[in-house]
Figure 1: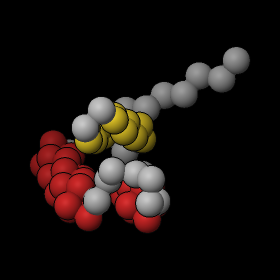
Figure 2: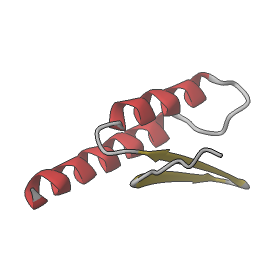
Figure 3: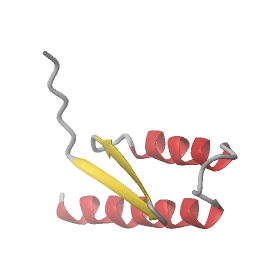
Length: 69
């Protein structure tokens, strides 16, 4: 059995679809790359506006972590 521990998550809700990205602190760039992969996928509802929202969310979250350190 494998147990995965994720301290953070990001959810994108688009129509009837829910995209949830779970990750550890410091893996924000991995999440951003994954969202970009979804944008490139023609069958996905995620678009460039969503990428900007993800980027803003990750930046704000990163600043909170710095302020709390």
